[in-house]
Image (tube, rainbow, N blue to C red; front, side, top):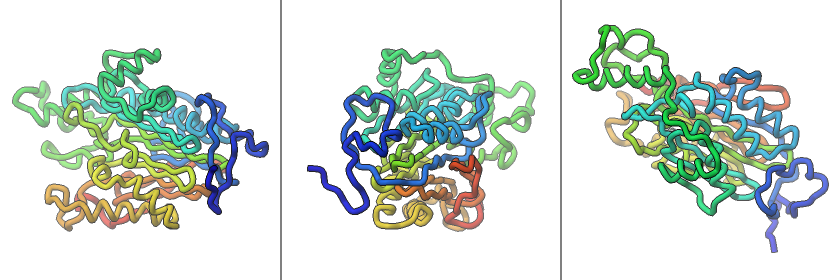
Length: 376
Ligand code: GLY
């Protein structure tokens, strides 16, 4: 017998009033799912979800919201949305043209969760597939597992008919890698015109000359995208090329359930961009969903999650001159009623996030936990 709490009621797969919101995609035999009576449909994501169009007309959040409003499965809609970002070489933090690892190879991480069916899937250190979020969704749908990595993930994708490419670098991502290599290993990677370190750096400006560092959001770029439909069905997806110039094989927070993404259909969702190691140490997306469960609103839950990261950041190398974290990390939080918030360790870090409702898409300010910037 299914237990029903006071906030929920049982949709036994066939409640007529909600039929339009039921998943269209086959997940095998549809299980009975717990679903709230109603919610305000919304899609939220990191800012890149309302910046890139890959030559088309819609951004990630616009496409995802349109499909959710039309009654498509929420996760199908979100994955179709982040596919835009993964395929767009202009976003050098996700998918095709993402920043390569220390060997110059683009290794991608992604995961997804489907709240109504309590299913999830992920891939890590996947090479050669432009859309790791779609492979993560295939792991969810077509296996009994949650996470496939490296060559195994690639073989799985190949067997399902995904195109496997030798190299996901673009001219731009290769040039960025070579630029990094010349900085970090100048004895072996010679600079042919001696000016390369200061010119034509497309990942943004350097914080400071030859010894400078890249902005935090330039090395941890990712997209997390979460959505809810009017029936209260919550899903989420996170996809990334991970930390720029990482040690080959490094897996960040993005494909790890509870870190890069977590949701509970009865409670809400949280997902992350930013320094993955800090998030992994605290499983912060899981923590934020638990804070929602305790009754916090999305903003307070997100800020409490960031505070946990701050409290657990004690290594000197990770602290600035004020004794505060010297990195950025953001969370995008959605509750089961469709209320949402975006929170950031610092206001200066990638300080907006994307929202799409029936009123259209917009970039709105993240709520910062700390004043100043990571480098203060
Ligand atoms: N949050 C992305 C990463 O650290 O890989």
